[in-house]
Length: 126
Image (tube, rainbow, N blue to C red; front, side, top):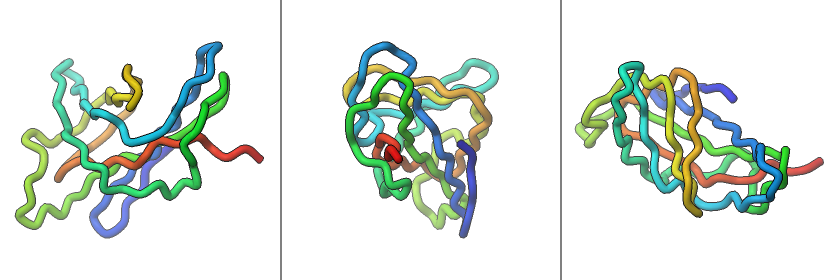
């Protein structure tokens, strides 16, 4: 979906589309977040659930072909806080689903001082 930054915070909106023939529940915070480097190395990003859901998404059932989102963020203002042990740019992310399983998203994702996640939610229907 893209990214934006303000005040030292960089946010990534990730769209999740149900490509199966079965509906699935999309609710709650991701259970894990792992960054994959170009070398194949995996780094546990230890996300905290400090973001609110600002996309007007709500928990619910994601029908086949429908989409939902989750927002990921990082900050470059550490101010003595514990940041990532190994910050950097990742070519893929494994996002743990609250009910089990993972979703892999490809792209370029830079994390500096920690990782934050929002609740997952279904996009509103018009």
